[in-house]
Image (cartoon, rainbow over all chains, first blue to last red; front, side, top):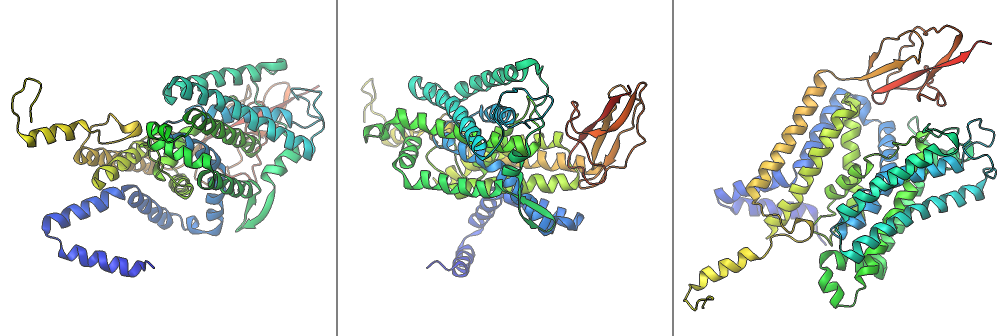
Length: 360
Length: 133
């Protein structure tokens, strides 16, 4: 029904009819509202000129793989942002679950195995471990959600404290059985294959299995967000908790469940991250929540609450990863990437508010 | 229209007052009071910071691969671009030990394959040692 070319023609015709001041405002709005996209475009063009390799199939596969790795956490955190909150404990929760998954799935004959009496690694044991780490994530998420919902504490405060508490537990965990804070390695081949096993190759780059799992996860989250009462309640509570309460939504349980679901997503992220990096250190997962929050805000999951789409989150993660892949290929080192990430988060929030103000 | 002291106040002013009391945003931005112009300045500033940081980095692109010989003789760090193989350095030596290769972690579990593994970010490699019996 909506013909894109006709749409463009209409906007051009509208633009011609405007007077000078309106034209100027229209262009400023256009430039500022799309500032991040313009910046991305410039980076991509520059990288493509400097490194022709950037436009290869392998580089595309690399982008898909990175998106698949960073997406689950963003999908989890997005729910908290829809409720006008956030979650700062995400990175540490995934770090803890990565460590637990790593220890459960070490090689049976590994010399430095932390627990000697674990059963042999097979399909059932991997499934049991996956369920365990998802449950651990969900329990920490439940604690977050309970304090947020019961006492109306701001999620910033609650999740900041669970972040630190979780880190303490991680350090305890790494000191168990005389491990003395050493990284957990010697992960079993079954675990590595289950996560990292090659599905097919795209231009010299092996596409691992977790890309498929991420696609399944997108499907599950899309269903929860769009097709269930819980999802609809989540958006209702996010846009106006009082109104939702009056219309019969159980605000307490919705809030608790959103955080629990988020926790489960971080648990899964940890399970993938353990096998992906090959060994788990106490600092695994540090600061990854910043990437996830930035991706959500870029993708239109606004801090005003009650807005956001799964497709937006995917787009946000893709844009953020594309920027980082381009910058890494250009040789920008990881310490500067932190400065850029910080600027992007602030910029994305400002853009978010700007769209809201201009619409009014 | 009357205010608390029963004085007449113009209607327009009343409307304006009410408008000021309505918050511009919901949610986390509820207490934010900002104009479009100020937002444009913030956006511009952020973009500028990003461009400056990238420009500074592009003057000296590349990643540093440093070698921690863990008690052996020192090995000079290398500057490499993304996707490059490292140049195999002259193996360090240590009294009473034989060198077993370079590893990604200080515990020497995950080896670095000099012929296959490529540089992806700033990296530190650790020397593996085996005690001579």
